[in-house]
Image (cartoon, rainbow, N blue to C red; front, side, top):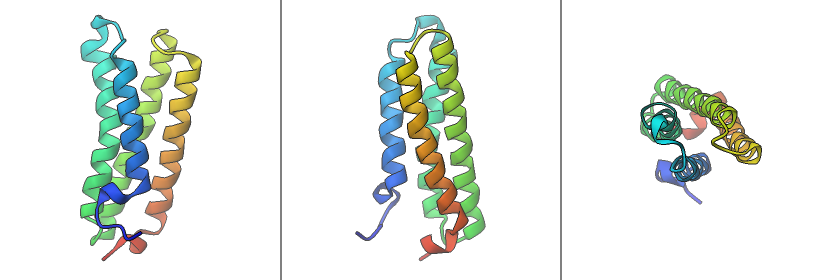
Length: 123
């Protein structure tokens, strides 16, 4: 399959699905977390996707492309940290935390591999 947009990338699709899963579970977080944990975990998980999209549009310029992939990696790592807080605060189960953390570690691996060979993505 030819990749025509960022939405065709498996890593984007995985990140989008994980962000939506986080959105759903964060609906049950306490109201006092609305402007802290809930907001932060939603923002970081969504930023993984948006940085992939922005980076894909900049793929003509390898350094810009890799920089956006690195930004996406940072957001994925931040999301894993927020998941750890959500579990520590007893808002999510250990299974939910581990499942989502595993998904984000998979996403991180794909981002690292893309960044190691940016010329593969040039047009």
